[in-house]
Image: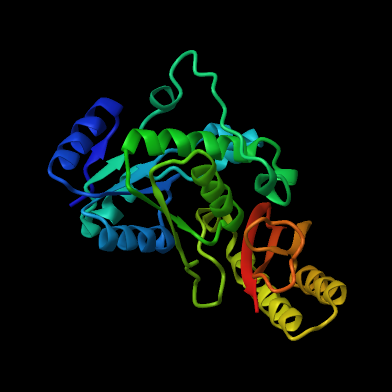
Length: 280
């Protein structure tokens, strides 16, 4: 049995209104589809923490600064509905672009500071698109809690800042990254890797974990990062857009005594992969 698909805001609001009247809590798992075990781990967490769970499926055009990337993004709605069936989610909300951005829509939500380095520098406008659609989906679903994976670490920090700054009545629940047996973080984009590239891709998490361990043990950071870049190049990776240690919350330079994170965006086989690991 597949998850029930809802396409209109009016139908969604009718459901959430009834749940609210019954005193039930609502959790939302925002996705762009092409669901994998990482997404399902978020759904399971939502099922444990909420009475009702909505999964949203919307490939948001406003967070793609590359039209080719938007066109190639996997779209597997029927398979997604089927994979959610055994988890007994209460609704799969699949709006079209006109439902999310009706004619005349002109409001953009922009989060400063934490959105500017790393992804923000390499994908101009990306986080404006993320912040805008997340705000819309939170308002549409009227959820009490929203579940996000730590794999997209900077996105998680942007959403947390958005909710804090705008005093949104919703709790952001971070969930650990889910990895394949070889360590590669699950991602819908992994589907686009060739068999050879998929085997090579394991070098990314290995390099990050090794570098994070070395830095936590006091190794000289520039040398550690240079060695990690050499490892990736030797494994067949192309451009490294960034490989940096940052403060975990602000994404600025590391602050002594505060948690830090090692984040990377790299290209392999024409596919852009991102990952991150804690340092220490």
